[in-house]
Picture 1 (cartoon, rainbow, N blue to C red):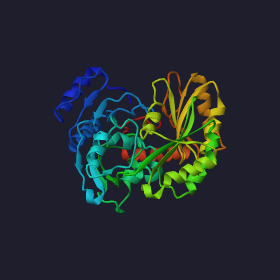
Picture 2 (cartoon, rainbow, N blue to C red; picture 1 turned 90 degrees about the vertical axis):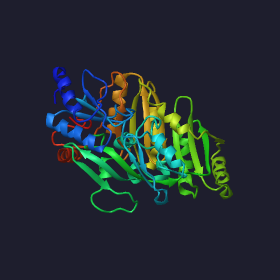
Picture 3 (cartoon, rainbow, N blue to C red; picture 1 turned 180 degrees about the vertical axis):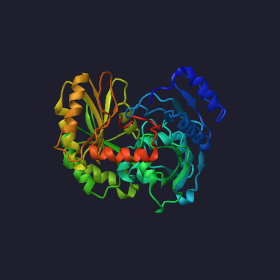
Picture 4 (tube, one colour; picture 1 turned 60 degrees about the horizontal axis):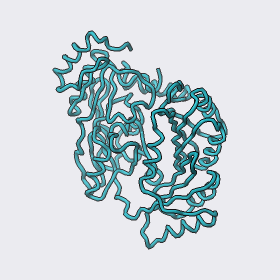
Length: 406
């Protein structure tokens, strides 16, 4: 769809300004709308459908580069939808607007000793809606499951302005099609999330974080297998690899009288390695450091048993590219590459064609300068299903066109 001609951006903005007020700052390429509630979001989308204007829903802007997509004709900022609506702590649930900053939500929940068991990227800027749209999760996924396991309900606005409520406010809810799971990870292409309901967990009380360094990542293979097979209450388990060091981080959450730290120390010593205490915020620092502007950042999935072998393969594939990675023991990898754009493209294509790792998928979250490559490499059968779903939700291709496919 062609861009909105600048000659009538002002006219369209005036018309939209009569529906919601105030609009955002003037923009030479797009209208900026900042609704204050779900009804106003619906009004903006209804206006966009009537005018055939493309819309980009935006939160904190931390993951706008994920996927493809072009310049929209309306930037739909959800920054004013920023309240925690309710927190019935006895039920271990909460309802929050999509524009709420993640750390603000967690701060409110912590008053009652609870939290949403998720540690996403850039939590001081990322919003609830953006995290849901990107399906972002972190190392807590090892214990508590993915974001789709934590969201139990949503309020969303379809591309034609229809307001829909899906799921519910209680954990045990089996009524109807599970739209929240479909919307999670949709990158704003199916509907605009305006409110979410989460299941909560009690804040960890006895967290201990340890680190083990090794000269090569394969030294961790037997140790990871033993930890997985043990009765250790593992809060987090991840491997980080850079030119300087290779290390395994283990976070435990068990009562001190269980002496799980001693059990872990014995495991480490049997492998001829040394256990050291580590910082609790190491995960956030390591993963956020991957997203420097010049880096190409990939999200890769493998089987859990293939984590160390895959990282070894990655290191041996091309020594002329600076490769740094953070990998969950469950098989999710965030990999940053810096170097020749041609070499990076070759390596990504080689990864996508690799048949040695069953179920391997490679998504380009951020492309460095000069790196031209498809963000998502999906089978034709998968794309056909995605296009059919898109047509059902957004037949006019208004919401974030081009994010997944042309």
